[in-house]
Image (cartoon, rainbow, N blue to C red; front, side, top):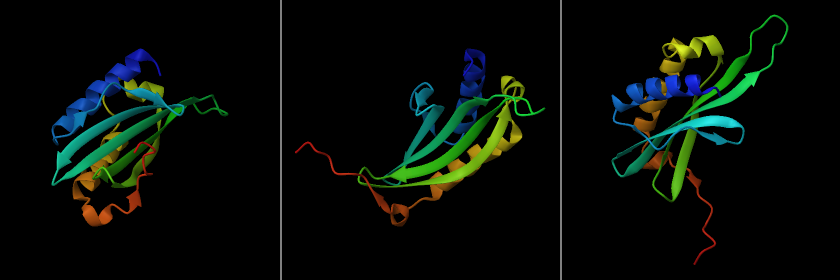
Length: 134
């Protein structure tokens, strides 16, 4: 991901999530071939997460310009059990990302934050693998 796009997205994401009480866990990081931002909010005894992942542009296909594949996820955990659900999947053309946050991406981010805030203990249906350290 180009540094100017990463910086622009970082600022836009931070502004939008901080209004809702989420905080950025660190700079965007390359995870399994995607650039990922992770945001956290602790409330009601749960860690609530929003993940935004950008997969690098696909080369030109026909007359279509290169685009990033974007996924936005909502999640929560209590350090033993967790839930993670897809809140939005879209494509973003590079030129759209150098200005304001594209509307569909902003809407997916809002949806993910709302879903993360609504998760309760009963939604935590998956278990983390046990630690090998004893």
